[in-house]
Length: 200
Image (tube, rainbow, N blue to C red; front, side, top):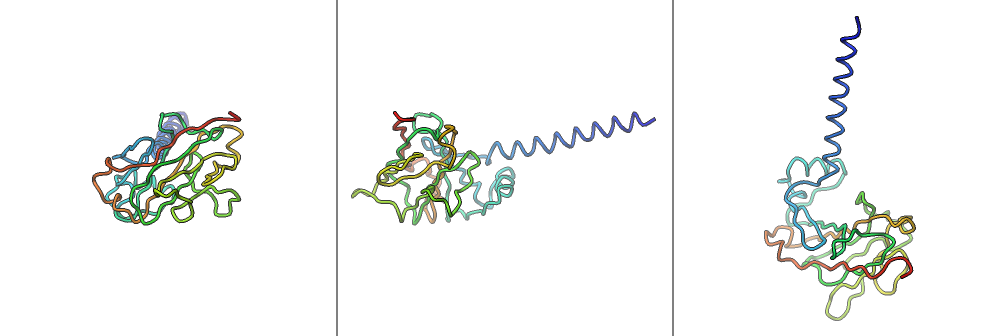
């Protein structure tokens, strides 16, 4: 007597549960459409504007992030070095070169979730354009590693170094003409070079 209603209830639970699960996976899998890749750096210029596609809007709403206007800022992330190898917290890297023109920029290392480091972190997990030391030509020279390095040092996420987990670098340009420019492919982005792993 209850067999048919039970089977219908199971089918509906599977349909709704599968639909919700697949939607959440799709939101986690992509920030949106229209990605721009410059070496290892990737940005979604429209994901940060009111013209973003529905996936980008949902992704940012789910992450609780504020939207930038088209001329306010642009966020680049890198999960690999210049050779295409995954960034590994057991290795050391150098971020060098130039950043696109911007009034202010920030750079931080994070886990794969991309969340910024806590403000009370005892290690330098984030750097910005006002606190780094630059050579005479104004270029970047930042060491990214779990152990302290001379000069500009960016620490990898806490607890990740021993296990050699992947991590991300996030470079945010604020008040930059690049954010509203269609010529993003001509921008010069910093290089990410692996300098060693472990004790080697």
